[in-house]
Length: 238
Image 1 (cartoon, helix red, strand yellow):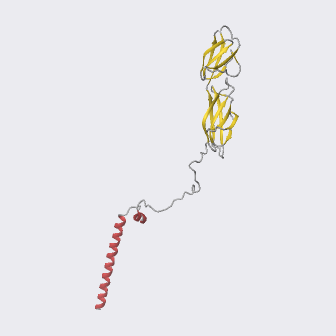
Image 2 (cartoon, helix red, strand yellow; image 1 turned 180 degrees about the vertical axis):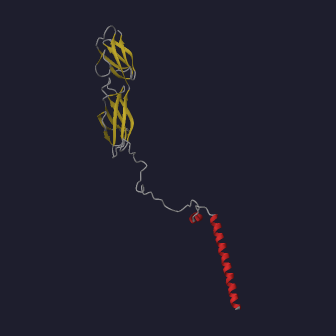
Image 3 (tube, helix red, strand yellow; image 1 turned 180 degrees about the horizontal axis):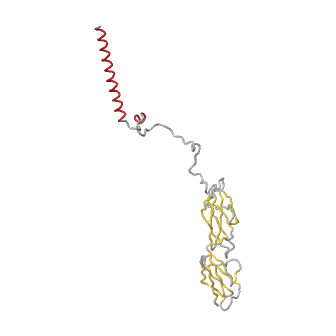
């Protein structure tokens, strides 16, 4: 009987201790959850907000595309590709395109001719290199020429150039009423030779900008100045 009472008392103590432990454990859990942020995760708690992970990022859209630094821009109209260069000149005088021919020579000590008597306004294909290009036109008195020096033509590209002849226009007229047509000669001031070609009074003459002398019969005319883009009349006084 005595032993039964002792076992009953021991069980009661165990139950009391278990209840207290559960109560304390429940209270600890409640306090912990109350102090835990809503966005709490175990990974964040261990690694922090922005962990520096050793990972590799692969861009599947561009992984197979590599563009060289010197690749041509797709909208570059002067990129033509290939192993040759292209040259396209347009010759202008007084804002108007005129006909001309040109010769291409190498820009070196040998100065060998590569192309000659090429018509302006048409594209030509040529080996890449540095050239001197001389233009001549019959649309200006004296068939003048002008040269572009050290023109670099690049592989796979087109070079378009506007070549300007500085030109003015004069008309030699006689004094008095009307204008009597007569043959004249004209030359650059101080030059020995007269310009090639036939010229006459009363008709406009296109000349490179500069100073000129003329002769009509035995009458000499000096002090003729031609301005780039200018148009003027010069009276012959006997």
